[in-house]
Each structure stands twice: as C-alpha cells, then as structure tokens.
Image 1: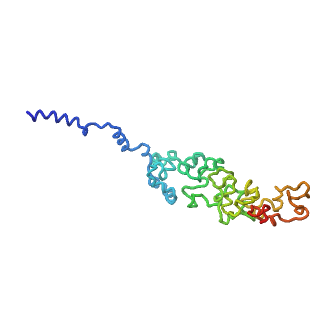
Image 2 (image 1 turned 135 degrees about the vertical axis):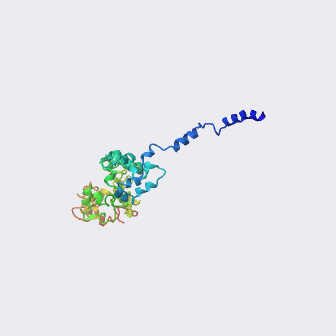
Image 3 (image 1 turned 180 degrees about the vertical axis):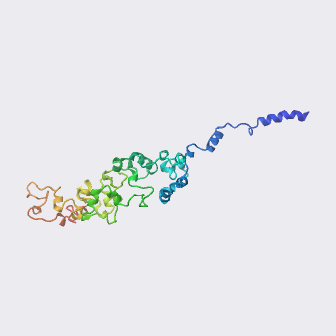
Length: 314
C-alpha cells in the first residue's frame, strides 16, 4: 500500500521538474535564432564559386591585396572576396550568370562606384577628403585610375604607372614636364603622388601641404624652410609658387619670368619718391635698372630668408 501511494508523488515530481519543462526563456530563443541559417548570409556563395566561371579574373585578383578579404571572418560574407565588392552572388549563380542579378561597375555612376569603394577605404588620411576631391567633382571614379583585377602596379592597384596614368588627363602638366627646367618626374626621381593626393585635400590643387601650400616643397627643399631671423615675406605669405612654376618651365630655377630682376620688380615697384625711375623701394640710386643692369640675386643671394642680414646679402 505504501509503494502504491508513492507512485502519484513521484509522477508529480517528474512532471514539475525544470529538466523536462518547456524552456521559454529569452536566452533559449536567441540561441535558436542564432543556430538557424540567416537568409541574408545564404545569399553569399564565396569566392571559390565565382572562380568556377571567372577563373582568369580570379587568378589575377588573388595576387592583389583584395584577396586578403577572404580571410576576414569578422566582417562576415558581405566583406569577403568577390562579393565584398559585387554583392551577394547566389541569385547570379542560380540565374546561370545573369548579370542583372549582381552588382557590376561597368554602367554604374561615379557616385555609386565611389560609395561602394568607400565602404572599406573611407578611413585614414589618404581618403578622408575623397568626397570633396577635384576628381570626384569632375566625375572621375575610383576605377578610372584603379583596377582591382588587372592593375599594372602592385602599389595602389593603378591601371598605369605614374606619371603616364596622370598624363592621360593632365596634358598641360605633361607638356610642362617636357620643358628645359622641370621637376624630374619623367626621369622617375619623384612621382605626381609625392606632391598631390589624388583623393583630395583641404587646399587647392590637391597638394599634400599645409594651408600655405609650402610644406610639400620643404619636404625636399628643407634649406628654404626656415624659420629665419629675417624672412622674405612673399615666401611665407604667397608661397613658393608666387615665383616658381611647380612642374616646369623655360626659365632657370623654374621661375615665372625670364629675368630675375623682372620677377623682383613685380613687388619692388618701379618708382620711389625722390629716386630715379626704375629704382626699387628704398634702394640707393645705383640700383636703377636703366643705368646698371645686374641680377638682384648677385647681391641678395639669400632671397628665401636669412639669419644674418635683413637685406639677404648673406
């Protein structure tokens, strides 16, 4: 009788046990959702599937830095491999290669192309002003210069090496670099990108420089930087390009005029009260350009600035 009486008690304990009760806690619900395959993730097929049809493109692409995205497990499939740029490829594959089922860059607008590239490349000092760059404003897209699949340079995946890539648009600058006196870009000593940031800067001409546009020049011409005890004001106020043509010209030192004196007289006016015609401001009478013609820099040889003499004699 005691054994029979214990049976209902045991059954009650089993039915009320948490181990067999239905688990409706939020944690279990989340775990179930996490284990279920995501609809979005299932649209991605992986780069190896793309290789099945696009083997030539894949073999070229896998030699570029973009291939490393296949190892990016944190970003998920939307940031990996081919589909990191072209979007999910499941519908494209299911459609037998239907190009309307996947993103292609061929007919996309500049705005769309740049926005897609900036998904990954927006950070860092190189691209922080890309949205305001002169190239963007003139509908030059990222793939106008870069080729993810068939780049000729390992660095930056450029379609052509500099300066030929830049010359394809900047014909005036190409002619300047052919002048007798020029920065040695064609000789390979420096590149366009050493002075300019093609992705945009806060200053004009996309020059890698400070607000005065001189910092890029002083990277090579450090002896002209100063600071000097006696500064030549135009160097600090107007910058190097007030006297020099940056790319090249017909005059020595890439000066804007053929004669140094003519350059100086653009600021040092031709007449002074009480002085002879052609005299520089405050200069002695023998400085007249009419009676005695010599280059100003024969005496004022420290024209960029001096630590010893206010007249730039030494």
